[in-house]
Length: 178
Image 1 (cartoon, rainbow, N blue to C red):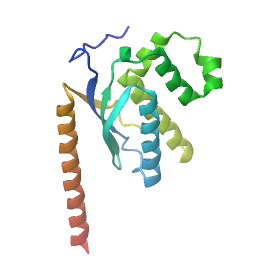
Image 2 (image 1 turned 180 degrees about the vertical axis):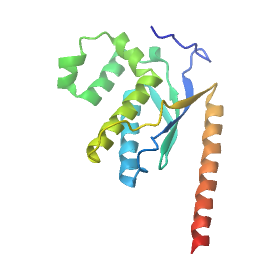
Image 3 (image 1 turned 60 degrees about the horizontal axis):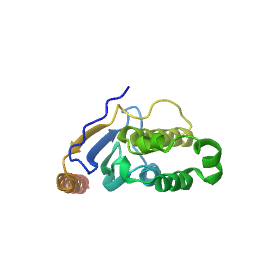
Image 4 (image 1 turned 120 degrees about the vertical axis):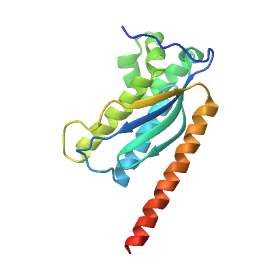
């Protein structure tokens, strides 16, 4: 049985920085791959109890800054609406309606479940579109929990600055080659 993580700030959700890297055996992500990963992140962010503060999709990894809201602030009606919006009313009534709402409340408020859906969905799409099979991700994603929104946003701004510096360095290197 999994251990319930202690909330850092009672009454609030948890703030996460997440870093997920693709396997070194895979080629770099194309712009089409990045667009698909972008869509997948946004779809699952609407299903799960996730507030997306920001994300970067690089050639070999993606980084997320999110808040997972506490499960108990969502009513049964809100959860049902999210499930119907995602699965469709017919499929929801046929397969998902009979499970208790507490099951969905815990499932939709879990970072491991959110990341599993994002990574698995993208892996399946990537393997199918590239006519391949096998593992796609390097290892389990890495994460850091922040105590509050300000620390999370500070991390996001800092990473944005580093990304800009990296892009400038790459442009300078390319100019020097010419």
